[in-house]
Structures are given as C-alpha cells and as structure tokens.
Image 1 (cartoon, rainbow, N blue to C red):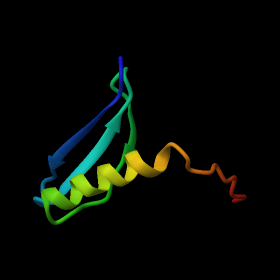
Image 2 (cartoon, rainbow, N blue to C red):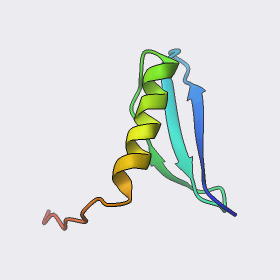
Image 3 (spheres, rainbow, N blue to C red):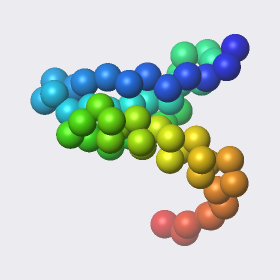
Image 4 (cartoon, one colour):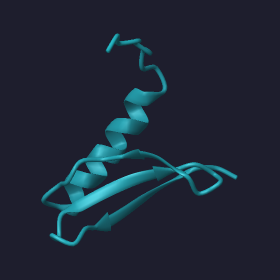
Length: 60
C-alpha cells in the first residue's frame, strides 16, 4: 500500500500536512501554514525535492 499526504486544519486553524506510510505510521510532518494553498505548495515541494535529497549525518 502506498503512502499518502493528509492535509488538515489544526486547532488554531492553521493548515498542516503529514505524510503517512502505507501502514498508517506518520513519517513526516509539515509546518503550520496560513492557507490551504500554501500547505499544498509545501506538499509539492516535498514531492519534488525528497527523491533526490542528500542524506547528511550530523554529529550531536
């Protein structure tokens, strides 16, 4: 089963998205957006950029 993006309004009426794996586990969460269109642009950005994103190990 493929993953999916969920687009929703939080309690403060900001738009947010989360990416869920096929098993329903949340694997990514977007920031709060003032408009639905901005949140959708955030989803589009993740779709465009994630596939080729570099993995960087950061020492803590």
